[in-house]
Image 1: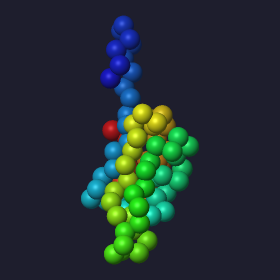
Image 2 (image 1 turned 90 degrees about the horizontal axis):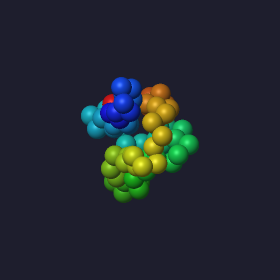
Image 3 (image 1 turned 90 degrees about the vertical axis):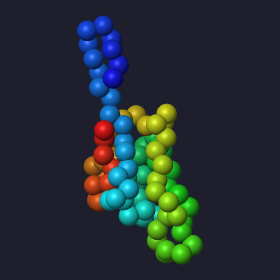
Image 4 (image 1 turned 180 degrees about the horizontal axis):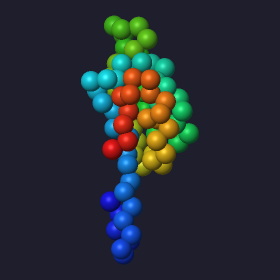
Length: 80
């Protein structure tokens, strides 16, 4: 929360729910991010079509637009 005198601005940031994320190599949330804030992990050697780990979000690049949340078909990305 940013306090600017009496005005308070609540900034939400993207959070990846690991219980819902399917670790797809073609992450739709990452694909819509114009700031390239999502880092999709390298492909898994054991699981075709999946990344080796969950995506990372660079909060310094993120502009808090929420497009990633809208794009994720698994509802694994939440703005919190």
